[in-house]
Length: 326
Image (cartoon, rainbow, N blue to C red; front, side, top):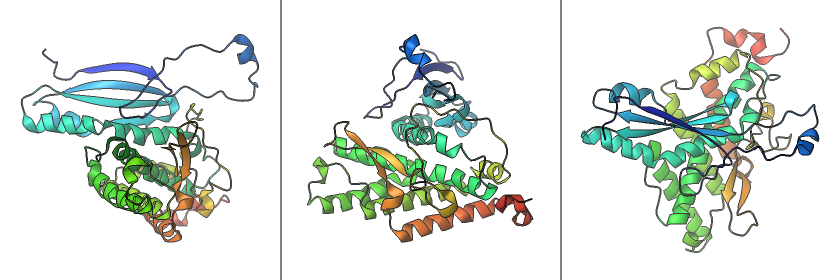
């Protein structure tokens, strides 16, 4: 079969989405609610939207590889449409480097989707910042990226438990490091029976490992100023469209788990993890409040440092950045 130089095939799917072993399991969006049920919804409550996954296939050739692959994200989440876009790459070439790159990228897709799913699950929290000062809005933007990398680590660790081997791709150079550290602690806690039991992500040492490495992985990427534009927009309180949450936004933020002004970030560091002994087979864990004080302090210092580096000249003196009184 001959491929075109660049082929993009799109197919939209509607969640619920389950990340178990493969990429995603999707359901079809059906109008199952009766008219009576719809009428019972209060008129002042905005109904949640469906979360969609749209998959594109991009064919890479000798001619387009350098230009296309460098600018094509493996996946990304768009809040305003509540859509996760996933790019599947296909190599139409005999070039071993391109074929290997495509193979490795596709093998790591479940981690990429988990990363974007964490953004989607917490979008109602990260997009509800219109009453916050620019400083805190910018810090939320940074933590949004930190915790998404934590989701990648959890996905890889649960793959290890399910399959008996570590995740096949060392994405970013951190997956194997985290796997080694967490599995060593897990086996210590379970007396060598770790292969048969789920990881206790609320263990302090394990929570520390994930948060510290998620922070370091983010800093590695941010060296290229990848997220600088978003942080600057938040510092300047750029107005955004009103966000309508999607159906995966289940975490309820409150004073006890989320208040950036006093560095309570628990809601953003809360994840769905697999649990053998529960009715649903999963539970939620809050890594932030499970972690040590030293890890939290280190993370806060890194967050603040990144935001300060994004200040425009003289912005420290602009009251609207830190004060509601202009």
